Length: 97
Image 1 (tube, rainbow, N blue to C red):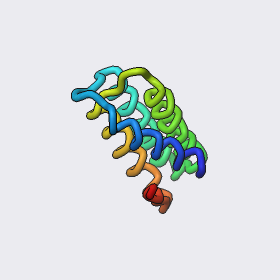
Image 2 (tube, rainbow, N blue to C red; image 1 turned 120 degrees about the vertical axis):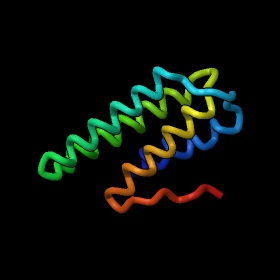
Image 3 (cartoon, helix red, strand yellow; image 1 turned 135 degrees about the vertical axis):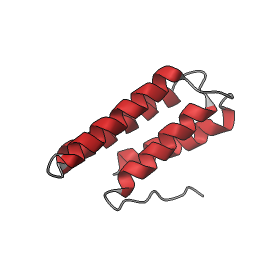
């Protein structure tokens, strides 16, 4: 859980210097992870594989956050999707003060 929280906060931090626009490649990867998550959860509520997809999204977010230039819409898309997927499991991210 801490890994997910850290990824979420890292992405929020990168929003401060994100440039306008979106990265189509990253956006497609997000959509694919989300589709895989839905498939896993529809398969007899396969929680283990669903959680694995959430961690894949967090990994993608971490790798993207480390790029020299990140794009605002893509960062927001990762944040939104990560928040939605963990919410399925009743997880709510703590807001950093």
